[in-house]
Image 1 (tube, one colour):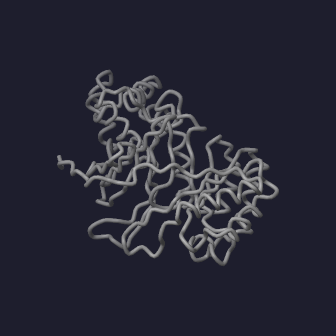
Image 2 (cartoon, helix red, strand yellow):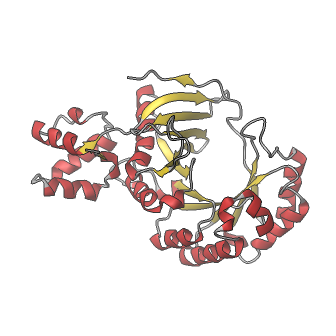
Image 3 (tube, one colour):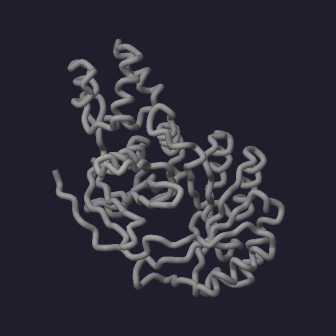
Length: 340
């Protein structure tokens, strides 16, 4: 029997499960406390629950769906990349980054890499997404520096809005004030532009931030860079953006990665500014210097002077813009974590 991850239950789910199994509501609260406050690593450590209850939990739920395979740290100490293996042997990457405002975890929502399933892909369950945060927080606890995960970015591998239901449940679980207590306004979902789900996200009114990876200011160019544009073009995307802004009155961050000789000319900067003419007060552009994935990458980094000129053009058009500060550009070799 494939067991459900215990981390895939929100507090109400856990309470209902205990009641359905003829147990007391307060037992669910005790279990929740063990999961997210004490952050134990097994049901057996929940010492104020009866042996029968622990056995029932163990029979029905999987406690941990992740195994830490390796950790790769940047030379500046600001970024760490964790390679986790799931129960079905798929691999996912979770990124931890230190900022002056706190510690951020970038979680993955899909996977597509395994030794014998190289061309397959699946959505992660809500529990598998939550487990990434718990696993990182547990390791921070072991370091005894008093650090805690304070911010979440839902990005990583995959399109978060293609896994909408599980991502939404994940957000409610980590936001719970009796658990990990990560503030909604400290969480960001980054999408390539699934217009229908942007509308659904607006209707949730969760106070969670929205970021859109734009990458190009016209359909011809964006079709070459962002596969999603073939399904949801810029007109459809900005219809959804306007709906979101009217519904929530919350700012959207537009991420724009500058590619040398591709999307970094003054012409593209002016076109980009034109997209925001009627939403300038709620549009925020984050320019991202490109980091080639390999030496054979088809794209290269825009020179610094091009990045600065692009930003200056946007500013002259009244657009709120900043150039993302780079961190973690040089990584040491990953150190492997022994399999237990």
